[in-house]
Image (cartoon, rainbow, N blue to C red; front, top):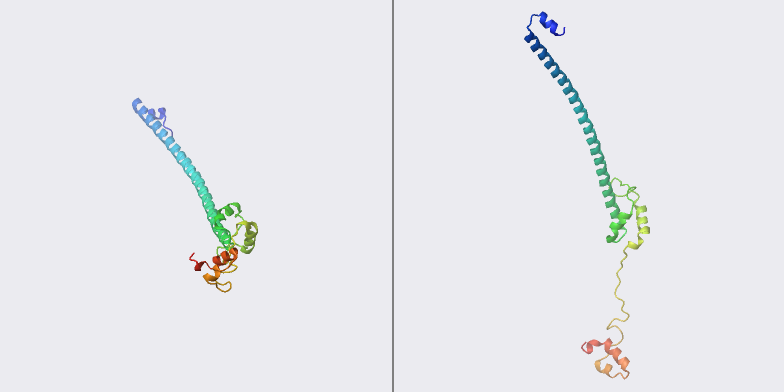
Amino acid sequence: MALTRKVLEELGLSEAQVEAVLAAQAEAQDEGDAGAQGEESAEAEAVDWQGRYEQLRLAFEGFRQAQAAREQLERVKAAYTALLKGANVDERRWGAILRATDLTGLALDADGSLMDAERLTEAIRRDWADFIVTSSRRGATVPTPPGLGGARRSRDEIMAIADSRERQRAIAENHELFGF
């Protein structure tokens, strides 16, 4: 049964009391409508937070995947650098070679080295041959080392040589006799 003016008057309420009851009923109904709107608002806010959570979760998963890919690329670079070092490539050229080489297709095995390393080493030696350092040690080339060429002459014998060119050559060969 609804509270109407007619029902309230039949109950014997005065006009002022009827107005007060109807005003209280209207106020309660407004609060009920506001509560229903608050529940709808809370549900909408919860849906909004869930959507935002999903966006952030997906962004974080993307970040984690990108970070894992960067870490994998760094491990591949380190393994490729080890191959460059093993192939005697000049250390100053490693950065340029790493920038010029596509490392995305390379895979690492369980111990952290590159798979098919022999083929890669051959490719490095073939493609980057200009940067491979070859060094060898040789002694100085001395056709006739001092003191080993023939019999030693004395200072007087050298000064007795008549040909000036021959005498100069003998002085140069035995310079320690002349103090220089």
